[in-house]
Image 1: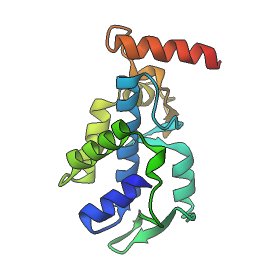
Image 2: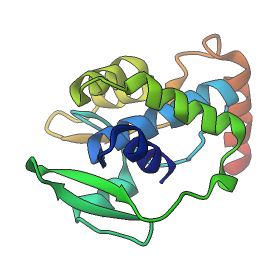
Image 3: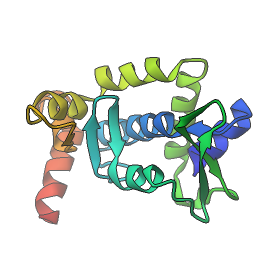
Image 4: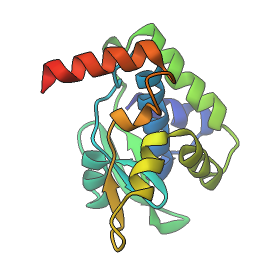
Length: 171
């Protein structure tokens, strides 16, 4: 909800579902690479247009509004869903670092088209590339894994080691 609220304040319009998905995935995977654990721990699907948080995708696809947000078709294109926050986000749920990371991503994408942001997710999120490139031939999606974000243990040594040890304890 923080992203949708901040985006609406900054841009004077609601965020689209596709842009929300891209920001969530940038945030989650950057947090993973830097800290060793995903910030949101969502299950992501690799779709042609990039990573998508599966549960949120299913809710929004059915135009399901909740007490936290409203989903509606965009006035300029009924194929596009816009997310409007209802109320204020609970900032107590986010650390100072997490708020700074989210604000940084919102600043980075400002003024860029959704297609440009989408292409950036293709380039920057290894998990999406691996899942998309290894999906079954006729499939329109593939499950992404956080572990695939690490090219090797040399890429992000501390984060990778932490992630691997945590993952073993959770299995």
